[in-house]
Image (cartoon, rainbow, N blue to C red):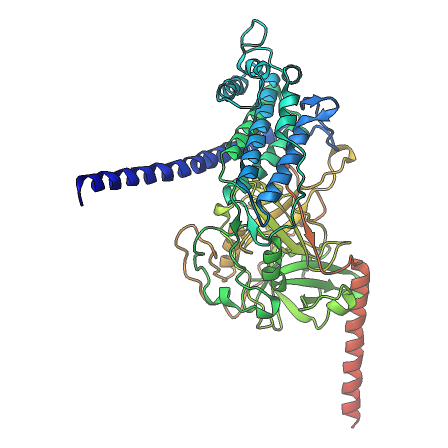
Length: 582
């Protein structure tokens, strides 16, 4: 190799290294920003801030010009551009346009930060970012607007006095209209199994969390300034993101009829590669057949319904309050488990067939956990793996499967992890995830799932009424999988994480006999009661509800199934009597 070739190779290597470093730097910045946002949303100050109102109203302060909410105009354009980029023919021009729109949304947030508390640390940081942004050069930006943002066009007083009203007066509306032209194209049909990279998705979810914080909380000016500063930083990070659609990893089990117990064969095996994108359909197809409908009944027509998850070839995990009678503190006399049919008809009378009689082998009313052992779990039902909760971040999308009251059977709802709670209901060590995924009566005991269809929580409670009778929405709780794993180990069931963050202990065989572990009778969690002292930190996300069944009436289902069991008992009695008579 001659000297020129050697220099060329070195130069190419250096350029490649610089390119890799450029790709890694935004990812590192985004990860650091996500940590800062999570720390802000989970700080004692934000968690302890009172709710602003039962129903959030549009907060004054958004840039408005000629009767148009400029932020909403930008958000609408961003949504359309994202759809185009996830469509069948993404264009570089759309990617550039989306970055420009995200950058403008960042400016709006920084201005609102500076206006909220100009003398605060966050307000001063926002002013610095605005000056840097104005100096960077933006072709469609007028000199008047650039001067206003940089401080040169404002009255003496330097960086003080920057307001949303002043920004609009300086021509911000014209800039927003220029970068959001009417697109002749409509949003294309969604391409299956395509999404943005996980980092971009997390930034978008974090933005929704910040918006809920300043909309639903009574924040001090300094805290409000911090929220808008972080939101501006998030939009700025999105304006530098790759924004490339990636193909989702194909579901390990493509169809219900092709399900195989692959996960059960290798408990604790580490998933390879990056985590899959969140695709609700794939999660449902993989997990729903392993979620069960539980019907508990006693004398006099009293009954309780709930959900549960198959966790190995013999056992089902659920809530204690589903299978333990509150009045007696003892298991219900009859516990039946129903498995999801391959084809749902939408008629509970036809979909709830051939139940298995189950016994409660262990329960803890304080932790609100219980283990059932049915007479037999179908061999085609693969156990749901436990997910490592240490890998779950606030803002991460999750799914819940269960039988919500007035909803459908085996309903899927989605949302995000809103925050982490150390001691749910004041019970030491009862760690939980708060989620805005829709959870109601009948979801109790069912799984909260991550993108890989791993159980990261057991849905256990919901808050529905606050002080003064004001309604609470999107505040639901799931017992974290690490609490579940430790409790199962105490009962003799060693179940390793399916996605361990470090080497996981080998799973051992389930014991032949489990002893019922009775909890103090004073503990009786209720799925409908608000959790005392639980923070009402709310993070919103697009929520989906998917079900193959029409809404059902729980009481009608209970009456129907009990009647069916009674008929079956009568038939068995008559058959026995006939045989004895012969």
